[in-house]
Length: 376
Image: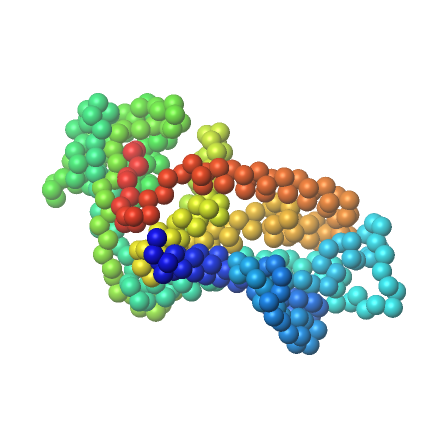
């Protein structure tokens, strides 16, 4: 591989990972500072310090591994805090602990915990906004067009043909193939009326989705046509509104995917650092628009993931502090330690699953624009 290309791909991975994690930690940092909490260190990167400086009470450093950053606040863990209900704590009686993290009101700690995911969403909104302003809003003009029809499947038997544009499924208007798929999949072994546009002529077909044991849903044997994208120029207001909608759609689609996999008893198709790195290389090859889009997607994913109520994640900390607000006293360090152990086990299991998916997934890095349609 050309050394310049290798450096380009490496830089692309470092910038993508580093930016989304750094902005996450910056959220914790800035809200902690504004809340009056003592921040002892704010670092860009991990590992050994390359250089740094002291500014006020905080040391700012740049470290050797440029994959994000971290914030260290005074009294950040329960063991550092001696409150009236904390167990086995000890401290110097002459040391001022009033600005320690754990001495702050529970709602302040929640704001610090939520600041990281919020900043990830803010970054994604900013990137989508820039993309829409520079390249326009991508619009699918064939979002419900049938691409392939499988021989012998219900759609082919009913008379559906490639090029048909599906207008309604079971009386419900549809605007994208995901909605078509959902409405069909939940009606296995039931007659469903499809209204299609065939060469500007409206036609109706009755089709009965066949239950597919492997997919655990009804299928009629169609796939979407290759997307045809047009770029629509948008105003500043439209770009901002579309950016918010994009983040909402990505989050909702991710949660829906996880819920569907859990209900079906299947492992979710999650990607780890290796897989994400492969996708980043593919995006770097595609150009700046695809690269910025992928960074926005990663930022949304990181923000959403950290909101999950799993111990050790930001969402898990929010749960601790909400319980404290309801009970009027913090969760004991013993309970928190046990919950964190469970959370660590879950996260390690997820990391193992993601790594397994990474090494078994084939990612085409040579033709980034070519994607196969999923059969419905």
